[in-house]
Length: 236
Image (cartoon, rainbow, N blue to C red; front, side, top):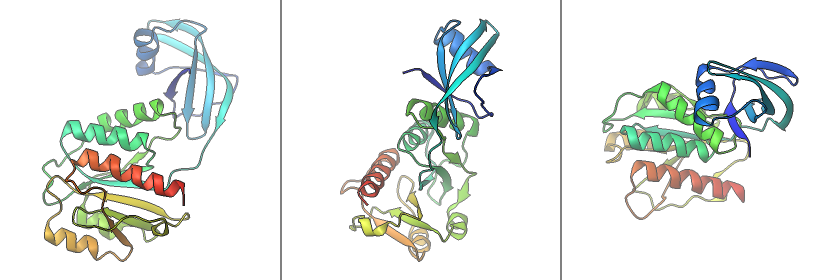
């Protein structure tokens, strides 16, 4: 398989383009590609095979040869996740992208220790995970929301799936509507406070569900919850 790189600009067959400094470094210094090497570039419009037609230390030009993949429909799974420390947060961003969410909403709750997110780093992780996982569209990452604001702004057309450590309910196929987006809500280490749980559970479209008998770390809970939703949706 050719190297895949995300290219958000417009791509047209039989046109050429100069690569960004970041892509030049990756192509020339990390992968050590040569003139004539092939690379695949992709964005939300599809994926194109390209060839390196000029390569020097600070200048790489490619020609887009042909479109090899059409755009696909967006996933209907969103993730609302309370911020955690750097390493588990990096893991969450990577794995949520690999598992196909279309939107990531960082949340601050009463028990959230981390209050900020390095967006430049987060977007880089998301794009790299999109490249690696053979997808076309990196998930959108929204601005940080306080839990109360997130619940207030939640689109009525979106079903809220609450991964609740206190629930013994299982997700079922009937919990999903194929025409409706779902948003998985996962709390912080130590769970939501009682008052926050009350706010969440008052939401009329909510479905609390269990993902394990055990207490999971937040990054493990993310992988388990998205995998479960993907599995049920596959057979729905």
